[in-house]
Length: 293
Image 1 (cartoon, rainbow, N blue to C red):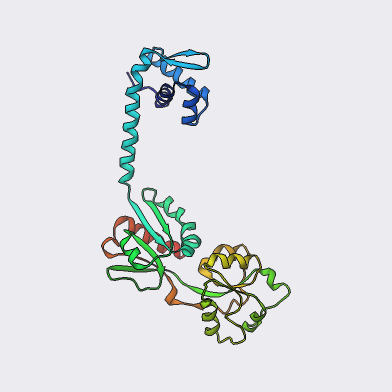
Image 2 (cartoon, rainbow, N blue to C red; image 1 turned 45 degrees about the horizontal axis):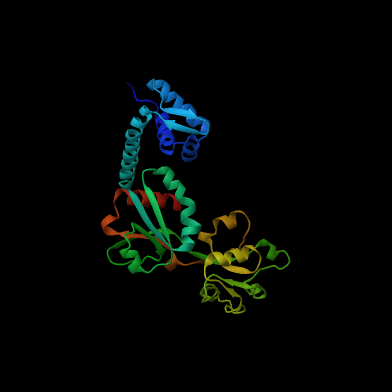
């Protein structure tokens, strides 16, 4: 005979194992009526009753008891086979620092998954040192600057640029025409050592603004959120502020004073031995394309 409906077989197996249509329905995420209908269709196709239906419970017939272990073994075999195949699916292990991961990489990853559904992407986000990155079995590691350990390749991804950013609300009553005008604002630092503002002020030779003033934050995201809320002016990394700039939550009060920092450009690194493996090459080509958008 031809193979009965898999839905009907699955419904019977769950109902028989639980001795309950209701519990089978909960397991399969369908209604109790749907389980009952599937079982009835299977009984009609086999030409035999599989359950004795009683008020508030069901009981397996002799034929039902005979069929149950065969189906249970079959479904376990199918599940194990699928798990075995899934383990063999090509996986791409990525490591990225938090701000870049959250603000640039992860929002774009669905595009890669859509283009390459056969490649499973695993992203680890966190602060790291090179020994951890080298020994962690990662296919690709994101970081800043072109330098990387021996045995690794590096590929430029996107530039690093710095300029002050703030909520447009701050500029309604106080104009910022020159860097000196920033002296009247609360500075928001994206690093605890305040080096973000120090670097920018030194580059543009601004002496009227105290780089040591204002509030410090442990990570860029916290400083940016404070800027969005109108609590001061942050030193923004424009590459990581696409959303806030596009929706008008943040603006650049001095748009002509953008500091380009090649030594802090964002790169991706990978072991030379696996640099051209198909999954790594596919991701690198995708990365080149999406970085240009």
